[in-house]
Length: 361
Ligand SMILES: NC(=O)c1ccc[n+]([C@@H]2O[C@H](COP(=O)([O-])OP(=O)(O)OC[C@H]3O[C@@H](n4cnc5c(N)ncnc54)[C@H](O)[C@@H]3O)[C@@H](O)[C@H]2O)c1
Ligand SMILES: [Zn+2]
Image 1 (cartoon, rainbow, N blue to C red):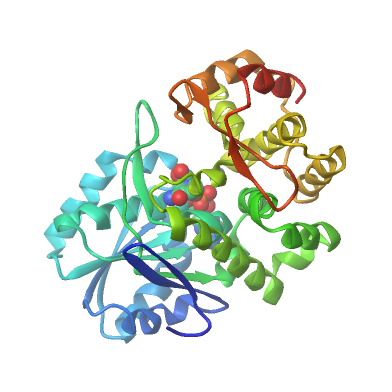
Image 2 (cartoon, rainbow, N blue to C red):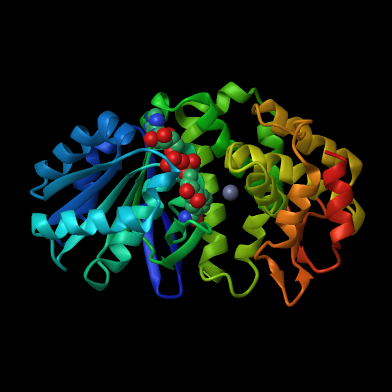
């Protein structure tokens, strides 16, 4: 495997992630070394298709792949079974078969949806992830979780189907609005809190703008892919508890998302949720007040919210959490951090702790 690639491997899977500048134009060349099928369906949303569709198609064509671009509406609504059926129908009509592969070109919505299509089309064909949002590069493209939403809730239908290859081109992020960049930083700061004190201090000590371009950004994305890769390498199916650490800040974050009918973006909810998780960690895991303050300061530095808007109904959040899927046998499994860079799942956290932390926000 190329030395520039980060290897993501575990029980029954092994694939590289490439991070660099200008890689979208080289996607065909990179894929040629990894995939021996010749036909690909490139699935993109209106934005990623408009911005990168031609470049990616051309790159695949230049390496003798025949490609077909399928464009769907942008947004979370597209992560549906209806959309899966439409895409599969179009693939059949276009003549795709078991010797084809799927390329997901876009943010996490496209990554999850195209991965799910790849997992089930003719019982499973290879998937290439070309993430074009920061969140997708550092989080959703890694680890093989694919799926769609139901009316009843998000990500309720899905399957683990690891990609064969991930290609991250930082040039893609130049077109990404600041609000979307921020969503990625929420997960990056989460990774720092649970696994990488050095990255946390690096992000805290340097100007925010330094991390937003060039080699520093490539390095930062690589470092985050490596963190998630290490976690999924030992627990891709969330059985041993390791992958659960990635839920730091998410129990309260998901509660806020649901209580506000998904009007506040996911990363913003997780940011506020991480503040609550730090308050709970002070009580239940010995986190120092100074480190909690450092987390709040870092989130603010990257433009992330650390308090709940006054009008949000706190009780609704608590109700939503009480129905959260992370309760196992009636016990809350809550991710706490005893110090920055470390995290574990605790079953000592009570609903009262959560209530108090939310009322504090
Ligand atoms: N599979 C996983 O492990 C995992 C982990 C985290 C999140 N997710 C999922 O990821 C999804 C969120 O992903 P997201 O935040 O990337 O959202 P998204 O895919 O909706 O992208 C956000 C917006 O940015 C646009 N966009 C994409 N790339 C662009 C670019 N380079 N320039 C300009 N605009 C661009 C998109 O069209 C969209 O409007 C959710 O559905 C979530 O459930 C999955
Ligand atoms: Zn998240």
